Every structure is written in C-alpha cells, then in structure tokens.
Length: 267
Image (cartoon, rainbow, N blue to C red; front, side):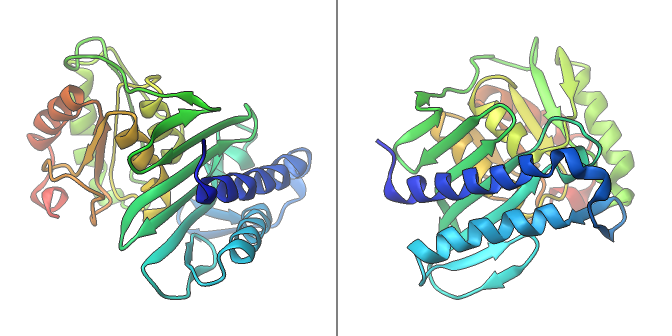
C-alpha cells in the first residue's frame, strides 16, 4: 500500500501530467524562453509546476519546496523537490519521451519518490525501505554481472560544453564493453528505466537536484546503487552520477574513472 506522501505526490504528478497532455497539440503556440544555452522553459512547465505546488501545499503547508522553475520556498527538514516536465526539449519538439518528477527529501535524503510518464500512463513510485513499483508492480534492477551485453543510458553536458571531450571519452569506454548506449533526453525517466530493468545502467554529467532526486530512490529501492564518478555513494553534489545494479555500477565507475578529468571526480 502506498504511503500517504506518495499518494499525494502521485495525485499532484497526474494533475501536472494532464496539463502537459492538454497542451501537446498546441506546442507551436507556446511561449518558450531559453534560460541558458539549450535549456528551455515553456508556459507548460510553469503551469504543471503550479499544479504540483498547489496539491503539495494543500496537503503539507509546512514543508519546504525546491522546484526547477520557481526555486526554493520554505524551510525545514522536509523538502519536496520538483521537476514539472523533465524532458522539456523533447516535449517542445514533439518527441514522446518526458515525465513529471517529484521527491520528498528528509535532511537531504530522498524518502519518497514519484516519476510519472503521462503518455504511457506509467507511474513509478518508491518509499525508503518499502521497495520500488511501476503501476503497483514491484520493480527490480537488471541482473547483468558486468557491462557485457548491457544497455546503458546517458545524457550530454549541453550546459557545460567544456566537458564534451571527457563525455565522449567516457562514452567510448563504456561502449567498448557494453551492448549499446541510449540518449533519450530525460534523466528522471532514464533512472526509472534503470530501476525497472529496462536499462542496465546510466551516467551523466552535471545534473540538478530535481533531475535525479526521485530517480535515485527508485534505483535504490529496486536493489540498485547510485554514486558519483569516483564511486562515492549518495546523491552527488557535483551532479555527476552513475546508477545501475551493484555489478554494473562498479564496472561503470571503473571505466569512467579512467577517462574522467580530475574536476569530474571531485565530490
């Protein structure tokens, strides 16, 4: 049975998903702002975020909120971390791969998570110590023992072009051992797919808290591991993340660690 926090977050995610789908046929008319190079925000992001904040504020008025578009509000040990539309660039181009991501953190540690794919009606949920679920079915990470035959997801550092060279070196190192690599454009869904065993692993440079807060709990509760490029467990302050089952994550740390610059290996 879902915890009350997850039930509320799932309701908020579905409300945001309804907003996102409602505007899909009107993408060309949306007002879009480029926050920085290749980083866009649309009015749909803002409307979806407002729906989430409204639901969470109604249920938990004393909780703090960190949202991608509106920033941080409130203080306290419990903080909701929200990405109302992870995969905005996909959405604006009509590419059907994006999601809503909501996590509740206690003193910086994820304790509840919801990732919702409104197009496929797939709801990924997790609570600390209770396992991870896809539409109420228990999820488990894949069983690969190494990178051989593994399907690995990644993203490219469009906000930090100075890391493009190391990214290509790391990708080459992984692809030299793995079956294939995917770049789908939604970090939260990539992590959810790792939790579901669809992907065997995932790595990316420079994620923000709202990109990964929900997804890492899904991976952990599905029996996997997440860490930084140097193999330090936990949410990386650097935003440089590796996720997978225990064996694949270790193999990725070994492969990536040989290619990453000293700056990318810092905590």
